[in-house]
Amino acid sequence: MRTDELGHHYSRQFNEELETLRSNVLEMGGLVEEQLRRALRALVKGDSDLGEQVVEDDFRVNRMEVSIDEECSQIIARRQPTAGDLRLILTIIKTITDLERVGDEAEKIGFLSSRLASQDRPENRYKELKHLGRAVRDLLHRALDCLARLDAETALVVAREDALVDEEYESIMRQSITVMMEDPRTIGRVLDTLWVARALERIGDHAVNICEYVVYLVHGKDIRHLGDEDRVVEEIASNE
Amino acid sequence: MRTDELGHHYSRQFNEELETLRSNVLEMGGLVEEQLRRALRALVKGDSDLGEQVVEDDFRVNRMEVSIDEECSQIIARRQPTAGDLRLILTIIKTITDLERVGDEAEKIGFLSSRLASQDRPENRYKELKHLGRAVRDLLHRALDCLARLDAETALVVAREDALVDEEYESIMRQSITVMMEDPRTIGRVLDTLWVARALERIGDHAVNICEYVVYLVHGKDIRHLGDEDRVVEEIASNE
Image (tube, rainbow over all chains, first blue to last red; front, side, top):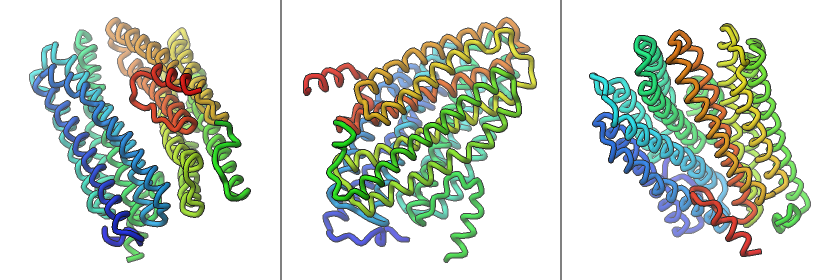
């Protein structure tokens, strides 16, 4: 399905409304990505002020969620969309919920970074977290890109790559336990870094959710929870 | 708004469809509550099999989510609801997403309980977690009850009580750090109990989300992120 086939609009105006909606969601996505980028920068640079700024700015993300959600309800009530158009709007309603929660996780990372900034940073400057953070940002960015381009094939690939994020998270977890056992005085600080890792891992999950919505939107198939995405890839391939 | 005023249905059949939808959501809620109850029982009793059973049964929750979600899309497409009916359906779409994630957290607790069962249980039999678990189950149950009875006033009260859950969670966190520092050999096990506490805290957040949806449904006001629910209570009171 291509963008221009998304529905059978009975008016150019409706088409424009849907385009505005989509661009608003992508704008919200951009804001959330920026929040995450700054939260990670605050961590790596030990910049307490920046961390606090991220916390303060979370309201912008929340405000966008409420406003887009309202827009979606109004469009459904006014235009009574069906098929592809309705799927697009329902996809957007779900996507912004996930984006808002990514914003919450970024806020959490901002808060933790701010708190960690008052303590000695480890010699490696949180190299593992930086690495995990980059992987997660990449995942989120590509998930949003799939939504922008309605690219279900890539969405399936991106969804699968979350496994790498989970592996990195598990590895950070194991390392952290070793560090804490060797020097129990570090427990408070290391736990804070573990919460950062956990927040990043969750953001990866939200990116996967967005990818799954894109597949649903494009193919009208709900692939959530199938537990075997290969089957869906094959099915889609065999339908083409 | 009372249940029977929820919309201006042009057909008795539509009314019945909405009732079925609502009762399906409450059934899903009941299933999720049961999963949580069993996961906590597995923890407290050190019952590894029960923990694994909870993990295995999560697919039931997921299946219900997909099926109700599909039902909602179909009703919107076929009935083209507006106003209160549309709000009800959008509320349900959001609620089942939260319930599915509560199911995921229960699954996580089941998994951790199963893993913890192979280790010595602490003398107090996870008293604090048991207590936190009871508080969270109560919160979730009451949130679902508010949805069943479309009781926005109680929903606001329940949403506020999540602060108590957060306090208990913070207290468990502090105690855990002390325990780990005193005996670093416990770190692995204590971290597992911390993840249980974290999962419970998250379930509390999902219960709050459901409460907020109920307020939106009943009053058509989006109270999410206002950060000051008292203001909404006053506003609602002054409108009556």
